[in-house]
Image (cartoon, rainbow, N blue to C red; front, side, top):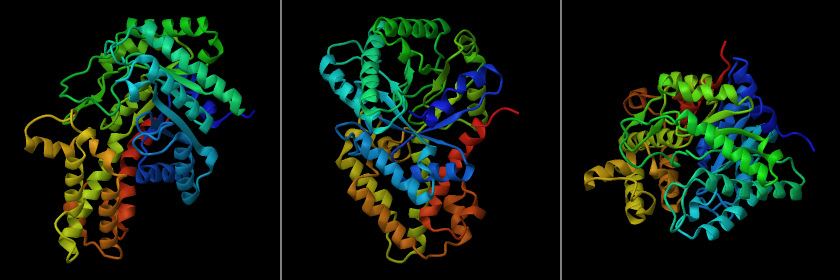
Length: 429
């Protein structure tokens, strides 16, 4: 049984950090085809592996909001990789927040049985980095569970993952564990500050997971835990970003000195500066998860092109993509209601421009797909004057996008964000 690429890359994170040569890995948490194309294209260009992760709500054995099972998602990514000329062996697949979260309104046992089926589907499909997240309460339970309950449920899911790997004849996965897990997709309220996980809480979490895995006969599986999720003090809400402050996380980072085989995984790193991302890597948080920040960049560029087409193409209309998305989100509000707050004018702005980027849940719907296709067709073969590029896409490298088709402009917008992560992840000199 050959050692998968993920084991070779990810298992070196902890020893590299201890040796003072920290490097990072960008975790691309998205199912959007333009985001995936940008990530895959960068991996091919840089000659580096790419870590692509699917979340439990996005992709699961029942389809998730994308309609894809884990096997479907793998095939979807592989098709884009084939088009971009990236070898399949350069792709690492990860499963994010795998646990009862999609079914947390149901009784715990019902939700956990569904979570088991999801974990089995992920491992069988070839996902080799598995984040087990049982941190949320289910129906009738407190919102926050105690460490022993969370660890026990994680061990239960790990046993399923181990059995699935044996049955499929593939290498067993690497694991990410933890109890202080940020909400997927960012906070749903204004944040002025976020306190890092207390060092003693991180140490207790690691210890209880180790003990419960051992009690369950999963000691060998625990040896493949490469990271714990903690809160280093980074987060984003609808309208603001809490920046990483290394001095506030110094005591938490020091915990890794007593945990030689582990690093920490940083969630919600979207919208951080390159300097902040590099500091996270250096401080022991080398797995940098980003998702909404990438689709936010996609939407920014798409709306810029929508404005350009409105100015440039006779008969195109006034911002039909934005209008279509507004109509779609108002007609099907479940994916943003409860996350955005305020009067109607504030809600309208958040629907389109929020850092939480709940609009990302709508891009794969037929109405959105048709509006984007109309835009790309309207600009096909149209030379966009540099003045319009400056006006509506001034945040992108103009020399790079000049003369490019609209689809390539969108890829460039996403890649600009990925470039910040790539630079932050490089080993310190």
